[in-house]
Structure formats: structure tokens, C-alpha cells
Amino acid sequence: MSSVLRRIKADAVGPPEGGHYRFGSVGFSRTGLILMRMREILMVFATALGCVTSSWAQATPVLLDRDMTAAAGATVTNAVGRFAAQAEDRFIPLRLFEDQGKARRGGNATYRLAKLALFDEPQENWLRVANHEVFGHGARLRDLFDAHISYELPAPPPYGRGGGATLFEYDRQPTVEEVLAVTVGGMEANDVLARALAQDALTTGQWHYRDARRYLYAEYDTIRYILRTTDLEPEGHDVGDFIDVYNDLATRVGEKTLSARTLRRRALVSFANPLIAYSYYSTFISYVWSGRTHAPVPMIRFGATRYLPMARFHLTSFGTEFVIDNALVRNGRFFNVTVGAGHTIGARTWSVGLQQTPLALVKGWRIDSEATIWHRPEWGEDFSATAWRQMAQRNQHAIAVVAQVGFKTDGFKPGDPLHQGVFVRVGAALTPTSRQSP
Image 1 (tube, rainbow, N blue to C red):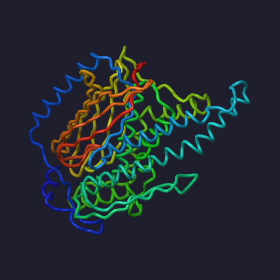
Image 2: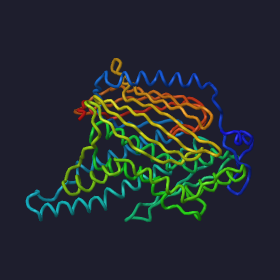
Image 3: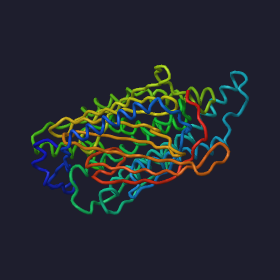
Image 4: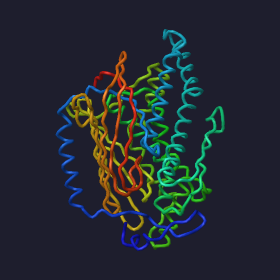
């Protein structure tokens, strides 16, 4: 943290009614070592990008970890959504009539629009809320505290009032960083889900319209929340609480505060994301009007390499952050360079992330990797590797075992524990046995 924050690191933050606040953080002074590691990883990733053609296609994993963090929870939410979509495709017809003539085509489109509104949308809306509450706020509470947690997840419109809530009490005095992590946890969880869906769509070059709707709900969670926020939100409003807690500390140390208007303006950056437009096209043009369940996901081509940039604005446990994802796909391999720049109290922040899926294929094992470093303004890092192996095959799909191991220092990394330590996730995945990269 900045020098002014270091002076109050010994303070604690009490319940919302009062108390002393701090951003808890542990510095990492070995700057040269971290930069050396990142240079080595970047060289390995860049070399491997064009070397091997992956035989793995879009996989649907389900991962579990000790606290069911947002990273693990997103796999559960996505798997439930995909299995529901597969069941729908199998038992519910795509059209009522043969597409012959304008009247029949219009009737089929009207049927699909009604099916979307009454069947698909309520499911995806409820999954967004459940992921936000259970694997967002709930995950951060499980990660940081031992308090009792309960949830309200009513039926979505048009079958219920919709919305949701996470009910809890802190079992000890939290730090400001922990309070902010819990406050933004719901939006964080849906960001993790959106990123997973984007990776699958970009790798395969297409997506199912239900994946497109799930992506839109997840990606819009932060955007809509911020754009609808005013400076007079009641307690329990995620963005309103974030502003209140952040500004309380900023005022006490004489630093610049945030306003709802500032956040609304910054959140507009998130519309610089082509996948938002693609999701609307997939739903209403490809599916509703044309009757196709899958739609292409275009990218910029540089020979055999496809590229797509995406911008986002996030609320985090340290402050606010702009993020640009630079996604590349070559020979079925997904490679992403993430660059982040933001603000914490009294300082600017930055981060760089590298991801490759797969990094290597070794004797039937697929190895994925991800690494992130940050300066906020103290150094931090997060490294993880994921191993997959197919165990049984039936028809066009195979069951794979999946294990992920990672290490991180103290600090915010979407989906992972807040504090320093090793994290482990295990599970299984349903994977197609072959793929064709466009």
C-alpha cells in the first residue's frame, strides 16, 4: 500500500456502525525475482503458442475446493446451465413448423422468442443471481470468516420477484480489504464465470445461444449494478456499500474519494467488449430468427492466429481497476495477456496476467497455466497450473479428471483466496473427443 496506508495497517475495521479501518496487505519486495519469473513464463508461452495443435475441445469441468471459491463455483454454475441447455435441445423442439413461407417462419420465430422469455431467460437470470450470492458473497465469507451464512434466492421473473440476498454476521473484526472483498464478491463471481465462457467461445470460434445469454447476464452484472447506482443507496447495496467503505477510509487519511457518478462514467469502458454484441446477435438473429442454436464468434485474423481485445471495469478489494484482455487463439490453443491499471487509496495500481490453455500435452495429460503479478503499490503474485486427463470415453464425449494447484501472495485475484497460501481444486470434466478450430 502507499505510505499513508502503511501507517494505518495496524488498525482494524469494525462492523458497519463504526471502528477503525485498514487495507490489509503484505508487501513483496523481491521485485527483480518476480519480473524474471514473468519474463521466463512469457517466453515459454510465446514459444508454445504455435507449437502444438490441441486435440481437446470445449470442456465442461466441475471443480471443488475447500471454500467453494468463485473460481470453483463458476464451474458448477456453468455446468448446471449447460446441462439444462442440453436437456432442452434434446426434448424441446427448435421449431413448430417447417420453415417454408413467411408465415411459418414468423410463427417459428415467435415460438422461439416466447420460449426464450418464459423458459431460457428465467433459468439464466436465476443462475446469475445464485452465482452472485452463493459463489460470490458466500465464497468470500467462507474464505475469510467462520460466520453463519444463509441465502434468499426467490424465483426469477415472471414466476417470482427475482433478486437475491446473502445474510451473515462477521465473527470477528474484519479489515477494510476484507469488507470490500465481501462487498464486491458477487460481481467478482460473475466476472469469473464470464471469462470462462469467453475463453470457450473464442477457442472453438462459436457458442450456443444459452452460453451467449449466460455470458451476457454474467458480464452485465457489474455494468448494470454500477450504472444504476446513485449516491443515496441503502445499506446492503453492493456498489453503494463499496463507495461508503472506500470513502470512509479515504476521508480519514485525506485522500480523494469516489462518487457514484465517477463509477458510472468509468463503467462505460466495459461496453468496449465485442462479445456483448455477439451475445445479442447469437440470441436474437441466429437463434430466435434463424433457428440456429450455435452462432460464430468472429475474431481479427493474423494468418493462422485469431485475436480479440476486450475491456472491463472492476470493483476490487483494493479499489477500482480497468482491465484489457488480449485473447489469441492458434491451432486450438488459447492465449491471453491481461493488463490492468487502477487506483487504490493514495496510489495507482497495475497488473499483468498471462494464461495459456493448454501449455503442454504430455503423455495423455493436458497442462494449463496462468500467472499474474501486480503492484498496488506493493508487489504480489498468483501462479497456478491445471492438469487434465481423459479417463473414460463414450460416443463423442470423454470424462476427464481435473486437478489445479496454485500459490498466491496476499492480494486480490478474481476467484482465488484473498490471503497468501496454496490453493487446490479437484474435479471432473465432460470433454468432446475431437475439435476443429476455425
